[in-house]
Length: 119
Picture (cartoon, one colour):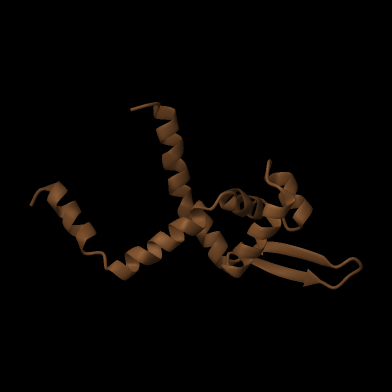
């Protein structure tokens, strides 16, 4: 069997349910600003103002929305500190840290493509 035929066979054996799950994961990661927010979390951002300073160009409204979404998706942990004023902090969960680790090869791939120039 040729290498191309083996590759086709491998991809044809992926169950449809796994494909849908993968598509959902790609859509989550592909949302605008998600990667930048998760990177800021990995670099130590915890408070809203820290995320805003580390994610250049995002609006306050959209940052608040994405932080809530990422917390709901289990990638960030939202903590409320009962103080005056109340403080809300976001930190990467184990799933968020794992996602960033598995995305690193994609980041490396994209850098190699950009360095290579147009095909």
